[in-house]
Every structure is written in structure tokens, then in C-alpha cells.
Image 1 (cartoon, rainbow, N blue to C red):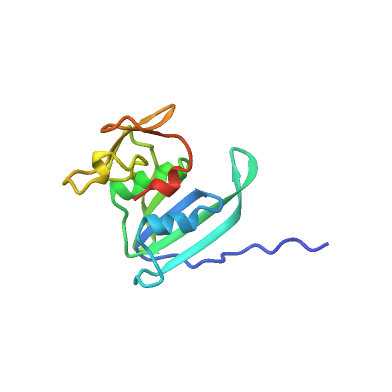
Image 2 (cartoon, rainbow, N blue to C red; image 1 turned 135 degrees about the vertical axis):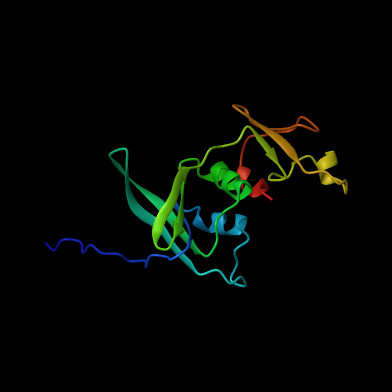
Length: 156
């Protein structure tokens, strides 16, 4: 029986962001949230369903590398909603300059679209949606709607 070959499958990036430990299958959602499409100019590397050893247990994860871009706090907050165990690595001149985990914020502004069509945040008012993150789900601060499932599809 042959051993599985080991090696680097994706080239390192000079400057940019590596998003690691994304929930398996969520990399394309992360790209959508970041506004990255086939029409944008970022250089990307995407790995999906990669074997991962987390806490001594084998599992799967996705990885996204984006060249020449460092994520904003709002973008990191969006990633935390779908992959709370993701890590963000800022790369400068091929070296990891910063490494941090994501944290689900307690308040979300302008990130989630309220499911209540009558909510003032869905009207043409000059306001951003506002949600509190609770154990029960995402609580709209305008109309008290609570979103408990399929949060990914409500991310703006």
C-alpha cells in the first residue's frame, strides 16, 4: 500500500488574508459574503473539504486565500456567523503578521436582513438593520423578530 503523498497544493500569498478552519462546504458562502465573484480581480485560492485535525479529531474544513486584501471587522463578523471556529491570518510579505479567531459579536448592524417584511429596516429608511445575538437566535432590535434557522441566507 502506498502512503498518501504529502505536499503543498496551494502557493503561499505575498500579501492578503488566509481564512482557515471555515466550516466544510461554506467557502463559497464566505466568498459571496465578501463580494468576491468571478468578475472581481482578487487572486484566490480555495480548498474545500480538506482533512483537518482539530482537537485531536479528524474532520473537514475549507480554506480561502485572498491576495492583496485585508478583511474589515464587519467582514470578519459575517464570517463568524457561519463559521464561528474560523481563523483569520493576515499575510504581509509572505509572513503571518496577525492571526486571530473570529468572535460572534453581541450586536450586528447592517449585516442581517430581517425576515419580517413589515420591519422598518426593510423599508426605504436611512437605517441599518440591527440584531442582538442571543441564545435563542438573532433578535431584531426594531420589530422583535427572532431568526433561528438558515442564518446564512439572511446575511446581506
